[in-house]
Image 1 (cartoon, rainbow, N blue to C red):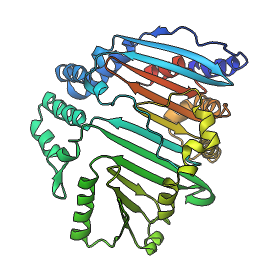
Image 2: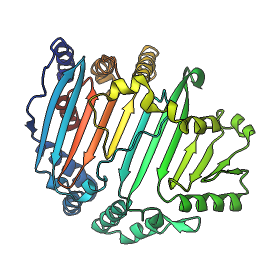
Image 3: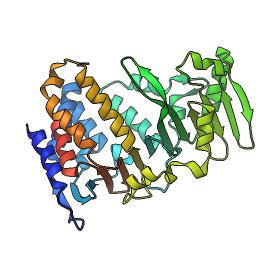
Image 4: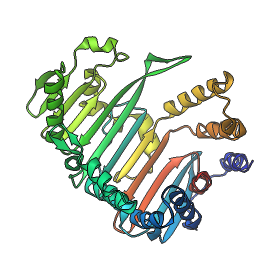
Length: 368
């Protein structure tokens, strides 16, 4: 019942309005670190687990601070992780002001800039610690067309973008229920020439029926429209942009047109700007979920409860608490937002949601 009591308390706190951001308080991260190490022990043995724990840099966390402010029924939370710039903490690039690559009315948007060379090093170090260098080399040297995974991870800095827009005017049926038809886009900034060579190799060896169109700096490959009947109405397009050194995969040509419209970008969406208010413009990673998506998730969840889609004992045991948490998730009149900024000695996580950071940290600690 502890989680339900906390959720009830969160609802009661909405009756109060904070006037200023309180001074940060320290959160004891040691229990979380111990639980992570225990999980590693169970998979790899004590010695290898402790070495990989250090390789990840988790043991280098010196302090975790948090601060929360209640604004119009929504918590604005900040968590600062003080640590050394090692392991997984060196994956994220320095904070930059890169707008979401997403059209207006997008429901889910994610952006992250990482150092792929560091990822390659972590893969190699992990397999070294568990005594499997051969497996690490086989993974990194695995051929992708005329290149290898090692070639793909050779870029010092790469930004990934993902966006999904659930179309309210079109349905996608999922058995007993339907959802708004998802239009999507995925973009990678960097290494576009390598990705295009992989696609051309695939077209040549598989005789794939892509049509190529070119503009000044963009080359687009599209499938015939009759493919829509075979893949739920989707006709994917892949665009390579030499000016921006980017690769973009979209669900349709129309989605690609929307992405190129600066006047109809997510940054001009009033629902997004309301949610993103008070969050930083520069970050190393960020994500946004619209209020519409949260409401859709709650409807889907309540239908699953009503029609008893699952009788899993673990779910039934916590059904009451989970239902309360889902209701709390929709208690704000805005969506969810998170921005992570990384620099040499710390990570700053700013989150806007119906839950304060102390609850989220408690949830993390008790879910491990």
